[in-house]
Amino acid sequence: MTDHTPGRAVVVAAQLILLFAVAACGRTDTASGTADETAAANENVEAMAREHAEDTAEPSEAAEVEPVREVTAERLAYAEVDDELVYGHFAFPSDMIEPLPAVIMIHEWWGLNDNIRAMAERLAAEGYIVLAVDLFGGKSATDPQTARQMMLRAVENRDSVTSNIQQAHAFVTATAGAPRVASLGWCFGGGWSLNTALLFPTELDAAVIYYGQVTDDEEKLSSLEVPILGLFGSEDRGIKVESVRRFEEVLEQLGKDHEIHIYEGAGHAFANPSGNNFNARYAEDAWNRTLGFLGTHLGAGST
Image (tube, rainbow, N blue to C red):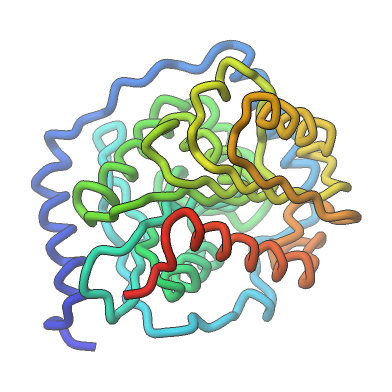
């Protein structure tokens, strides 16, 4: 593909606009998490460490799924956090002419690695702009000990992570021009997909949570107008099924638009091909549900 294609022009223009604007963005004012939130987040870190203790970040052949059509992808600055530019993986269909709906994709506890970049391109091929964000300061882990440290660092700097997500949303809407936006994440990123919906309770158009930390706090969830798709495993020892059921019950009581699927016998990270709990059948079903859900709430994604 040449530099004169419409898609390439969108990326180049987007980066130029951002680089001029990001210095003025600064860090978005955010409210620090409560002591209870911090305690719950730290507990979640330790739960993830136990669940991933024997896992690696190396993808298996199951992760090597080719996008269904040509995609253009770039390493792109989308935010400034703590006086540092933040680079994500920005992908879109190469034949894109007009801005498409966008998905803010949030990595699991390993960080923004090749696995996540491949998933971003696979999703972009379905007809979306995808911004895979980086919440770990440009680092990714290859072993559970390092991943735990990076996740703890993010928990301890919640305001910075929140600012990162807020600027990602501003980037895909104001700079990339996406008419509708969803969030999607796995594990650590699944929890932050829900947090993104809570940050933008009326602006976000959909949120997909793969086995991420959830809440049954009615006050937090009461303002939520974002359709939720939750995908969980019944044998997940980190995100326990009881907490998922409470989350589902509160959403039901509040009359919120939601779909919760609990895969019987599945453990944590059942959709991650590099993990010991990978279940190809459930992963494919979850992906198809994800595509259907995004298609319903963002539009078909066709150019």
